[in-house]
Image 1: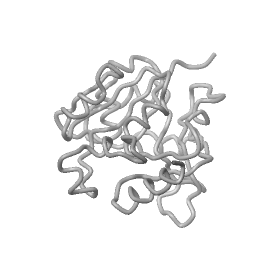
Image 2: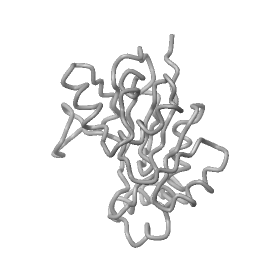
Image 3: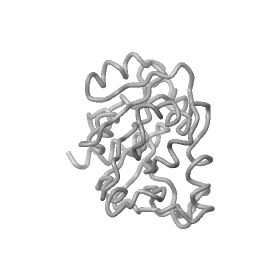
Image 4: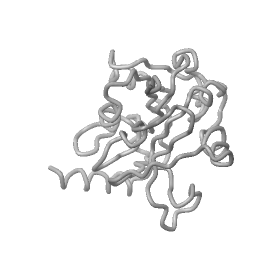
Amino acid sequence: MTPDVCALILAAGEGTRMRPATLTTPKPLLPVGGVPLLDRAFALVEGLDTAVNAHHLADQIVAHVGDRAHVEVEKELLGSSGSVGNLRGWIAGRAVLVLNGDAYLHGGDLSVLLDGWGGETVRMLGVPAGDEPFAFGDHVFAGASLLPWRVAGQMEPVLSHLVLTAWRPAEAAGLLEIREFGGTYIDCGTPADYATANALAGRDG
């Protein structure tokens, strides 16, 4: 039996490394290939009951999402783990697929996170680490992870991050599964990476 899964798109951050663009526009609303990153994220979680968190320029996120998803406006930044904890009542016993709202995933989808999952392990989307630090085995995080309720339900609505509350503890317990993303992952956190994502999207027309 496939576990019941919902999705959370993280869209609350201030995008400080992307200033001045993010002084007036939330980073998830910046376009890549003419499509806002947030809309690309929605396409990746299509079919799942979805929530979006918001904080920086939250009114723009709320207006853009409309009735497509539940929007949770955070009074203060809670980090990836705290945002899950803040939505425990909405998640309500389900597993949750957490996706970074600034992730550009080119040439693949998130099915590798869900296929054949039994509902007990923590799964992480990964790409080969190369020389990148902070790896999980031979991979680094590629913008999305899948948490069972037994993990998500323990999270608190305080500033905290999934690397500390979910991924490393699961790794230590032998319960972290890395699912390699077959395409290209770009974290659109800097102007250089954002430009790379747009160039890649532009080559697809």
